[in-house]
Image (tube, rainbow, N blue to C red; front, side, top):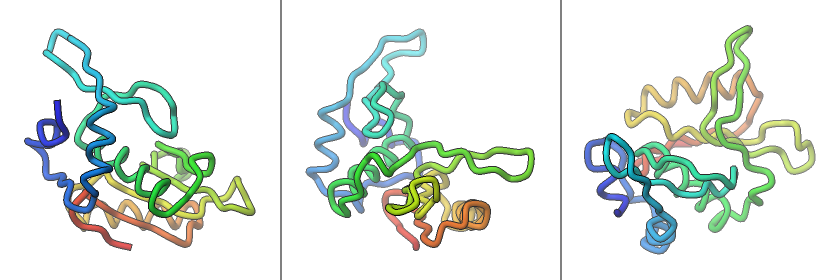
Length: 146
């Protein structure tokens, strides 16, 4: 199974990733037989456990590789599905990078959830306001916005 198969019915794209990054993720895919058919999985770079490869998860795993390999952020500073408090409500940011000198402080928030820029940027803005993160990135695998 390849990433194009997983993304075929979504608005996510792979154009911002290198062929090496795509190939690395494709080589890590395992499958499980379920009642709904064959389901792709991979081991998350950060969580170190098997996770279902949905279209959103494909982009998240590829972007984790970008953050680690291209930009040299240590995986120990990266968290996935990070809880962000909005009063009594807790929402989850797709990826956060913690501050190098203050490990309990969010340095960067990355949102890969929404295929449409406007939806994702509004969500990202609220996460930055709630965490105080100075850097925010939105991507759908094709477009990127800072």
